[in-house]
Amino acid sequence: VGLLDVLRVRHCCFIIGPTGCGKTETWKSLMEACRESGQDGAWEQVNPKAITSDELYGTMSRSNEWKDGAIAAIMRNMSKEVNGYKPLHHHKWVVLDGDVDATWIESM
Image (cartoon, rainbow, N blue to C red; front, side, top):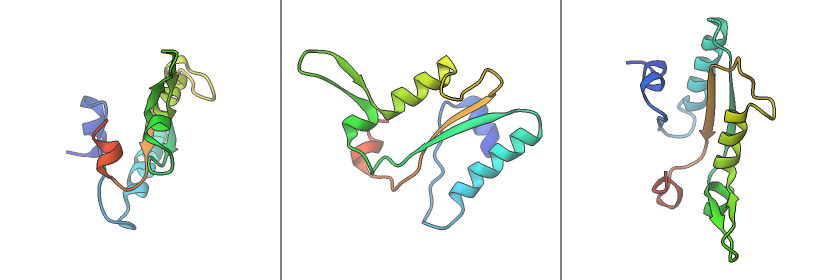
């Protein structure tokens, strides 16, 4: 089973491995192959360890107002097809590129 097969039946997947093993090149190569086969796509990359958990996922203010985090903002832009996202983008990926740790991964 290839990565594209997994993405066809799942909303997310993880490519895990040590630094320098080719994780980034794997998904970038898949995106390029999809484009060459006529399925355009777009991606946005976030390092989850470079921002706080509230900045990543969102938070409720003291006045009970929701403030979107990076993932929600990106996904909303993708679904509303704004900020460069287009209807012709068959593949829209949010790439969380950083070390996996319990602080952010458990909330996924």
